[in-house]
Image 1: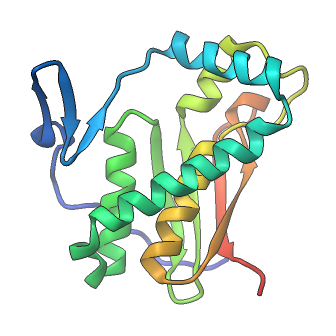
Image 2 (image 1 turned 180 degrees about the vertical axis):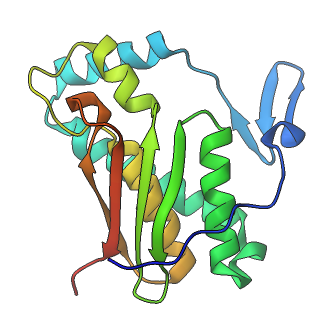
Length: 181
């Protein structure tokens, strides 16, 4: 898939929008609840113990909905889809989900590839101790990428993880493609 180099996002900081008032932490208009790595690993374990088949699909769907919601909050940036996508990638990184970079994109098709390292899901999967075989585990992240781009472009896309640090690959690599019609 040929693509052009993705320009960097304009400089900004999520910290400018983070506020704590009367025991409520907010990021812009949304309430934020911090969760430690260990708490997230416990969450994965509990879900796996009660409904192991749910993790892949439920976390993708949850990420998809969060991606949609994030794009809705960035409507003013939608006038320039490339700028909005850069902003989203930078927001993902600054929110602590991990390092992600766009390696190629063509929003007219729409197609994009992303490469990530130190993504929270891959790192925490080991601590959750629920997977017995190597696999791709970044379901929430790939859902978020698909949800964001689907709303941004007004056309449903899907995101698949081709390589994953959890299974020993050098990096997590994602391919975003239009949903088959």
